[in-house]
Length: 124
Image (cartoon, rainbow, N blue to C red; front, side):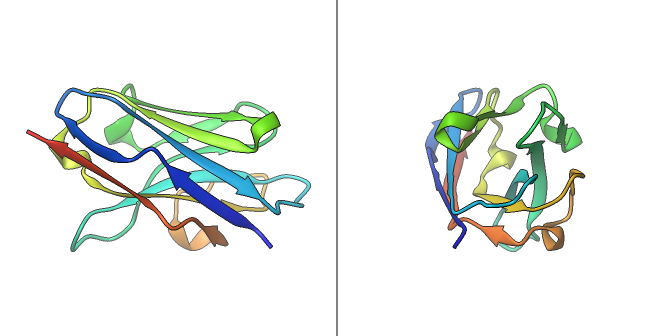
């Protein structure tokens, strides 16, 4: 059974930084992708970033390019999202997700497994 557990959210002032972690277990795919999404109250869940578990390919949403960095630590089955220069509009619940694939999907419906989310609040 695939399980994803996020952590690292919190309250931070605008301009600050946070690092989110997502620990994965039960992954038996030969190749898969880990993605980060976020959802603010009253809004749809939106893509943030994704990374292939094998290799170094990554993609980002345009609004976070240059501020966010997705990375992985294979030995710990963990994916990170380093968030710098945070803005109030980055406030949302952040979710990690995964699916077995060789591509890097940007749509939530393309992912099969989800974590419970971690709240990020950026104050102005």
